[in-house]
Image (tube, rainbow, N blue to C red; front, top):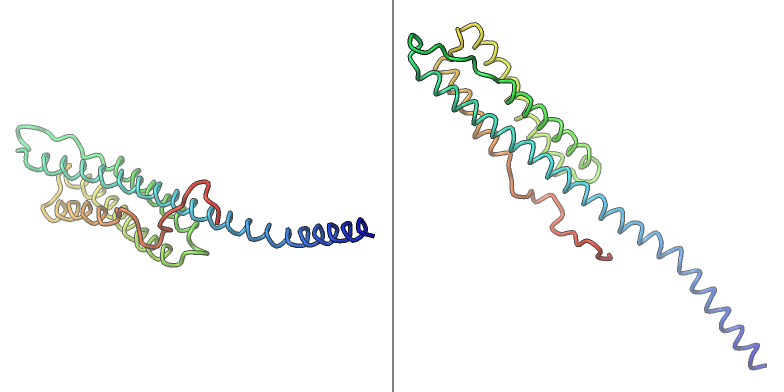
Length: 180
């Protein structure tokens, strides 16, 4: 009789252990899903910030070249046309990366989505200004007016404000290999 009771007890424990498994698996999958989502957000954010940094650098180069060329007497040196192309490519890349960040954050992180939308507006405005200034440059014998130089010079601080060390809307830490 004792072995039968023991067998019943072991069977009951096995059934209880198996019954607990389905509940543990979804919890583990949810933790994994949350961790994966947080990593995707961080990756998208880092790529976006890198693209914005490149746009800031290209804008700084363009501004410096524009001021140098506008400071030269036209009769002594024929300035080479300013090349807005590198800045525009960098801005387009930053716009693409910001759209990717927006897509990753849209469903689960509304605060990050709002931040990305604001940054997207700034990047698109800078690109639009760059295109307009490039067109004006062609019409004005490759020289910008003081007002146009000022407008171009304001792009750099505007873009620099998009660079943040880390928005509050991203998860604080993600420990690789940790369990939730």
